[in-house]
Length: 102
Picture 1 (cartoon, rainbow, N blue to C red):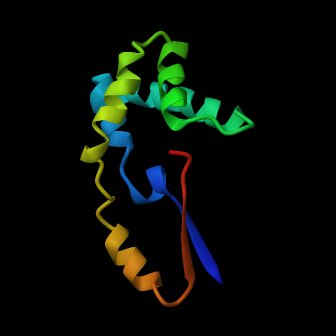
Picture 2 (tube, rainbow, N blue to C red):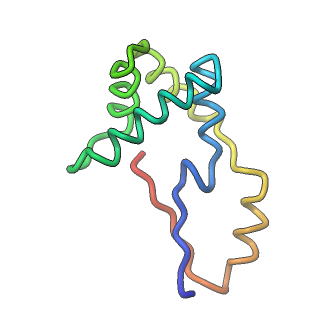
């Protein structure tokens, strides 16, 4: 293995918990996040993350303010607990990369 690439908002940062919290439940948060992922995978040309989050909410009849609320609370995101250990074990052994659309 020569390199490992991580998705920022799924593999390194626990963004799921914030989506769930803003939505008021895990079930609704995951439905909203699923809508966002469908949009993201099918978007083609780049579109800003914020736009996709808001559109994902309105697409499933949720308030667009949830999207702006998510962005406003971005500073609350935290790394998954095991991330420092995993990255430290890989550091210097392989090239590390991070990908994101936000």
